[in-house]
Length: 326
Image 1 (cartoon, rainbow, N blue to C red):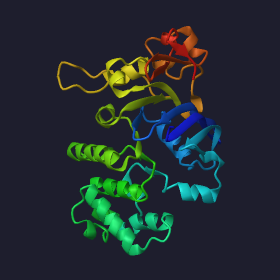
Image 2: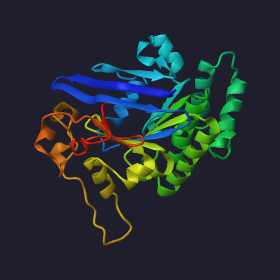
Image 3: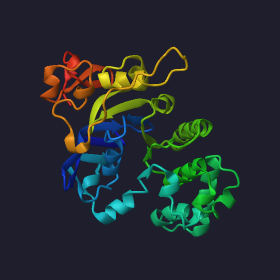
Image 4: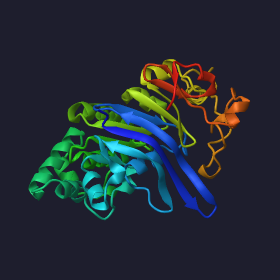
């Protein structure tokens, strides 16, 4: 059974200027002990999808359709008190820019241990502190005991990111969501963090959902990739197959736009820009920027075609796949 199952999820924001449809009919699963990467340009709906799964969409936003199950449990059927027991215990999220996500006026030790004290019945402060020190050492933070007495501004970006990961892992969750975990980190720290995430998955057996725009990060740590654009899924495939045989024009454009070491390979940016959620075009949202667009692309949404084991794509170029359906 899948740890997380998202079915036909849609999220809208009701603004003065109109309805911003940020997520439109998103469906995918995350299996046990699996790392899934969700990629796409900024504004594709990646983070909003995660926020909806965490129950963090607040007015003027709303989940307009869909279901989300965590280990078979319907998350959207939970009360506020039930959400508070699930969030942080069974499913956790590391947000973008950890230095801002951490409270600047509270010591690191308090911020880490209060998660454990809230969710673990009968836990003492001494036990919570001991658990925090052990996890800090596991993420290779030196002088773990001293770190607990410091404030966020006294730590580097990479250290803050590791503190956020420790906070998320304090209660041994079934699913860890990481939103752009390598943004703002230098290359050396990025490499260390990616090794750390792989090691943690093996040790904790927690499934991981990695949100990023960096396909290099995906290639290193993910087993499966979901490509989003305009609030929809364009393609989903095992990571090896996505890189060796990308099927959607958007996926291929993303791969071609990656800088190459050779000076002879010029950058090939994708023309145009991601549409605003207030003005998602009809049909395939990528068709205004697509060099393979056909008349039908601007009229109706393409259905998913399965073109290989675990490989599906929403594109009229692949209507003759092995089977159609969502």
